[in-house]
Length: 189
Image 1 (cartoon, one colour):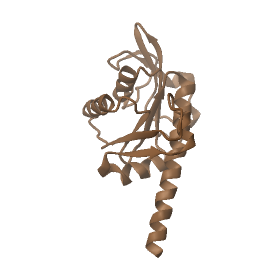
Image 2: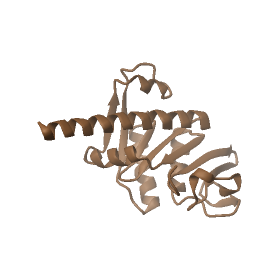
Image 3: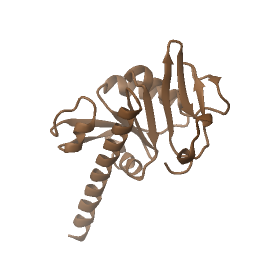
Image 4: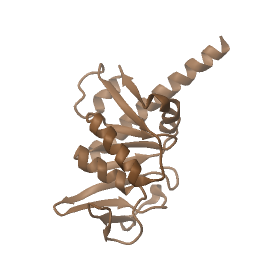
């Protein structure tokens, strides 16, 4: 994690609902347990000190709609570049790569994964509604991108979410390097 970028959450309990989420403004590469706060289903802090991530509402939508146990959000170079390059398409297809089999439920490299892209918005409640609509429409997605911002992915538990993050980041790097190499070759040709 680079500096204060990104945020992480994990469901502590479903009844009553409790979500541990990173506090805002902290160096995510040096987190301690005390730097997570516990929120309820409305995003209100019920345990801990600090302010929950400004994007808590997005985590809550993903947890509710995808039955996720853990949500991971990163601001990688590759996700940022691709989110801008394919923004007008509102997403990008990833297909034909063996690494796709690391995503839950995918059993063949012939899988075709849609990675939706949403325009970033500082109005988090409005952005949460947009995320909800996209996840309703693309219920089999394993993640989504926010334009010029980064990747959200999730899993039933931390291990699965981490695996999805690693797989998607790998695939985005392959796509970006391939696209930029092709652009460079065409420009020279």
